[in-house]
Image 1 (cartoon, rainbow, N blue to C red):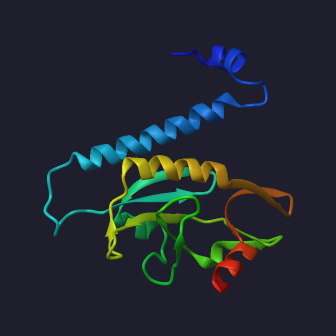
Image 2: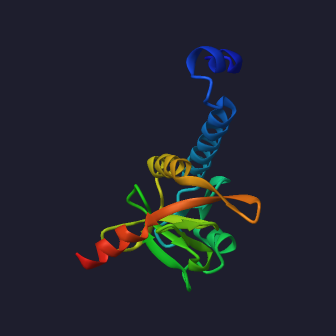
Length: 170
């Protein structure tokens, strides 16, 4: 195991912030642990099985939530939400369209999103540990900082508008 001081001077170039790397790894481990703990709870039948989904906030990380907790994160979830295939993965992503900014031909989400898995019938099923890992990586890669009125805020890059329009015409 490396000590933090050794990591910052010997292993990585000076322009990488090791505190951020350690923080992201910690968040990933906590999310995976939450999922594993939830999976190890009492064995449930299909009728009372709770679905595990991922709640994501730009710049704030992810949390594994049971489906009933997702309505607290995203009030429009399952009602007037927008649903797309999440960028860079095989999960669905639900978000509030009112929290999307269009800038320079790209769409940015500035609010929370719920990510979940669907089976071949289109039914929601629980996310896996691999899903959690992949979503954490995607969120980290696609989170950018936008600036308006002298204030900075995190946003999640969804897709470019031209790519979406091209997909519609195929």
